[in-house]
Amino acid sequence: MIRIAQYLAFALGAALISPVPDEVLDQAVLAEVVVIGEIHDNPRHHQTQTSIIQAIDPMAIVFEMLSEEQATLASPDIRTDLAALEKALDWARSGWPDFELYAPLFSVVPEAKIYGAALPRGEARGAMQEGVAQSFGEDAEVFGLTTPLPADQQAEREELQYDAHCEALPRHLLPDLVALQRLRDAMLARAVLRALNEVGPPVAVITGNGHARRDWGVPAILEMLASDANIYVIGQGEDGHIPSGGFDIVLDAPSRPRPDPCEAFR
Image 1 (cartoon, rainbow, N blue to C red):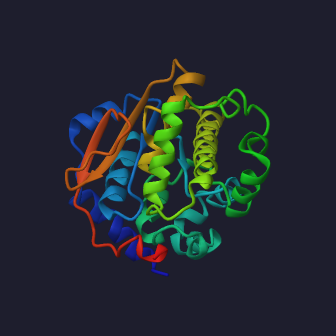
Image 2: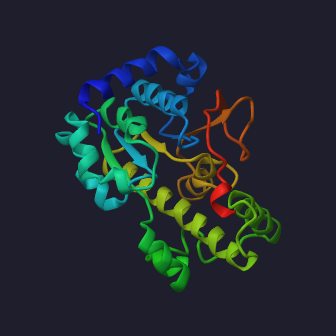
């Protein structure tokens, strides 16, 4: 666990190291919802997110990484002590990368209300058993969870899951993983709509590129349910690789050294 001074130094470094193009900020400040994708363990991606959030000064920030219960713990008071917030969120056991990557996102606009949309692991197992529509609850049909995907999209999404799991999973599990991804998209979209209704725009969304994609991720659900909202979608790539999904803009950053993610499957 690191001290508050280290968090603040990290946030200051973000503004100096990773400036965001003015044209991106100009578009972001005009939007009611700004979805900012990421590769979760890339520090530059989080620095960029911090710069964008500082510019748009959102009324609310929706985190893929937090459950609804955790979000209630991230009050403005505790966010003055980010080490205490890290402990309260039990981040060390969350499975997400180091909290120091995300800490500036909590502190840069301390009065913004925090919303969570994570699907806890235990609930994910339950959703696979009972079905994602049942797990989502009321309005599952409205959020598209009772409608089968087009066959070509279903097949594409299953292949993405197969590749993401290093071609190591039995193929009969892939439809369940796609369904869980759709459930997480719907939960994020629901949290955004709740934030718009409760505190108003602008709302920032911190999530992985897979949920941020315009073609079938969170923005697609928001376009369906809040078609009059101005949504700006930012993806983030590495080393010139553009993530798939049709973002409004894709920003680039260097990759970071990583162990082989497929080693665990061998």
